[in-house]
Image (cartoon, rainbow, N blue to C red; front, side):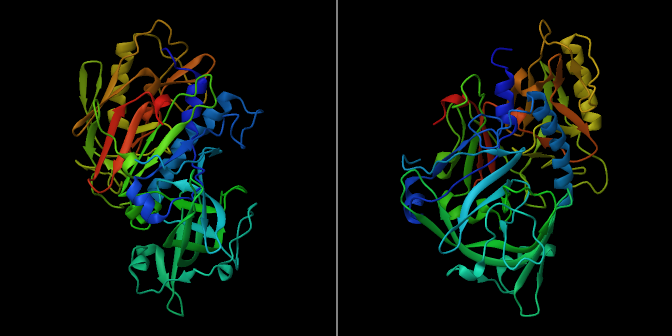
Length: 447
C-alpha cells in the first residue's frame, strides 16, 4: 500500500474552506475563466488551528463520528492565470470560508456546508447570538444592505423556512440536525472577493440571512454559515454568472511535505475532462440542496454486486432508482444501506482471506490488525455511465497503530459517498449540464 500514510489520510479527512475572496472585477473574472483555492488540513502545521497535543488517532476518531452526525444533519434538512487563490483551513473538521459582505466590506469566517444552501452571518441587533471572535456585522453601517420583501422570489425560495414580518419584510428560520439554529432577516448586500492579482472585485446583491437569533454548536472562529449546496440560495447558485455552475476539487496526499495542498477550482477551471475522465448524471430530487447520484452496483474484484437502496418508508432516498446516494466532500466515510453493506462486506472478507478483528470503538464493522500480506481487493463503484476504481487508500483506513478498518459503514437510511472514496480523483460538478465527473489524478500535481 505504497503512499498510504497517516499524513496522507489526515490531510484529506479534515479539509475545510477558508476562502478569502477579493480580486478581479466580476466581468473580468467571468471572461477570464474562474478562480482556484488551496485546501489545507486543520492538522497540517500550516494551519492556525493545528493542535500538537492531539494524536493522529484522536483526530481520526472525531472525523469518523462526524460522518455519522453529518448524515443526521442531512436527514434533518431537508481557466485563466488570473485566478483567485487562497488557503482552505480546517476548524475541528468543519469547513470555514473567509468572505466579506457589505460596503465597506466586513470579513466573516463562515462554516462552509455542502449540505445546506443559505449564506448567513450573525448580525446586530442580537436578540441572542453565540460568542464569536470577529465583530458582529452591523447592517446599519453598510451602504449596500437591503432587507428583502415577502413578495420576492428569494423569499419564496426559502419554502417552509421563510416567513413574513409585520412590516412585510422576509424573515428566515433554519435549524440543523445537531440542534443548532439561526433566524433573522433575509437581505442582500455586496460580496467582496479576494484574488492573487490584488485587484478588488465585488458581486452585488448577494442574498444572505442576517441572523439576530443564533445558537448551537458554532465555535468562536466562525461567525456564520456559507451554504454550498445545489439550491437557488446557495453560494454556488448565486455565483453562477461568475462560474457557470462549475466547480471541482482534488484531495491529495500530504505525504512528508506539509506545503503540498489540495486544490479547488471554480468556473472554466472547474471543468474535468480528458483521458480517463468519466461522467455521471446528477439526479433531480428534493430537497435540491443535495448532490444526488445513481449507484447501480459495486464490484469486489471481478464480482459485481447489484446495489440495493433503502426500503424504509419516509427516508429521503427510499425506493429510488435514480438519485439513490449523495456525494459529499464533507463526509469522511461512505455510508451504505445495511442489507447491501452486509453483502459487500462478506465479499470483501472472502477476497482478503485474513482474520477480522473487532473495532474497540464500535464505529467500523470490518477491521484487521495488519494489512501486510493480505489481498486487498479493488472495489469499483459503478455509477450510471461512470465506473470508479477505488484503491486501498480509498477503502481502508488505519485507525490505530494495529487497526485497519474498511472505510464504509452500514446505516439505516441516507447513503453518502464520502471523501475517503474520492481521494486522488479530480471531482468536477457541472450544474448546467447536470453532471459530476471523475478523473483519476495525482492531485499533488494539480495547479
